[in-house]
Amino acid sequence: MVAIGKGFYTGTLRALITLFLVVTAAVGGWAAWVVHAPVTPPANTSLLLHSGYSTRRIAAELKKAGVIRNELAFRIWHWAHPKPSLKAGEYRFERAATLPQVYGRIARGDIYFHVVTIPEGYTMFDIAQAMEDAGLGSASDFLRVAETQTQLVSDFAPEAKSLEGYLFPNTYQFTRTQSLEEMAAEMVHQFRQVAQQIGLSADVPRVVTMASIVEKETAAAEERPRVASVYYNRLGLKMALDADPSVIYAEQLTGTYSGSLHHADLAVKSPYNTYRFAGLPPGPIANPGKSALEAAMHPDRTNFLYFVSDGNGHHRFARNLEEHNRNVNAYRRAVGMR
Image (cartoon, rainbow, N blue to C red; front, side):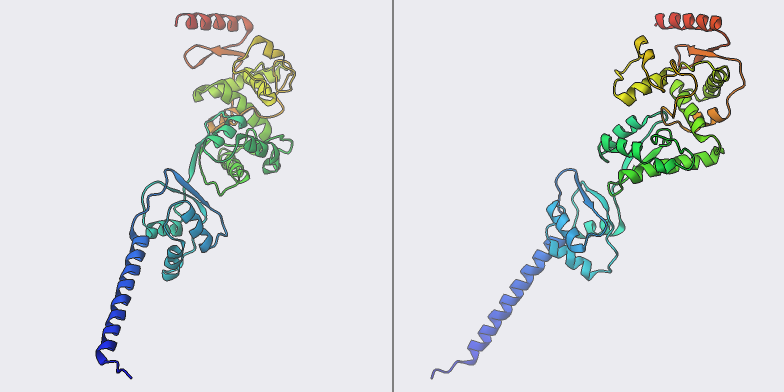
């Protein structure tokens, strides 16, 4: 029998210890690299984390998107630290970040918002396109919502055929975790707030419809009460409103609007054509802002029945057709001088 010397055991132990230290150092270095070395994601990386996603699912989505290097490292980091709930939402990763930085953003709910500005006078068709341009959904899907979710306004506009008029112009911040229905509801909620602020509670559809016409006719806030007075005066005399924007809207509803209005368009058969049908159209033709709503609620007291552009962003008003024709000729001269 060959005796195994004490030195053999000592050497083997040293080798094992050395191997252990080397492996530990390698694993530690790898872990430090995985956790603390910044990862540069692909350009304009956007990630949608839905409510109910588990930590495992979130880690997998981050790895798949190229935001972190290792799923297990992310899960261990979550386990080893105080456990805030990871927040659902859309996250945009545009620069290099370490795993703790990525984790911190999701724990804080540092989500990405799409900013959508809805100017006064936008129709639901314009808004639908703005939503699509902001990456929040297709225009056709938003139009479907605007045309079907009328229960949002049924308490004050029970006959509404769409949400036209009640999608209040404003700048909104939306995230793609919201549905288009929720976004439309937020716009209607903004309308309700403004309506309450200005005391609009009676005859809401009538006021909003008038305000929508006024909004489309003039961008000059100081003129809006006077423009409103013209239309109310015509209504009182049972005259046709002869509002060009209503004809444009009639053609937008049928998809036949060419981008400009021609004389032949004035004969279009639609209840929105205020040249053919007396009275207000059956609903709003755009989404008016606060100033137009107030003008429709509190029009000036005038005897004006006509108005025409002065060629400089405002209008000339007339009490009779003779005055109006003079104003029309003045407008033509002004345009011809340019």
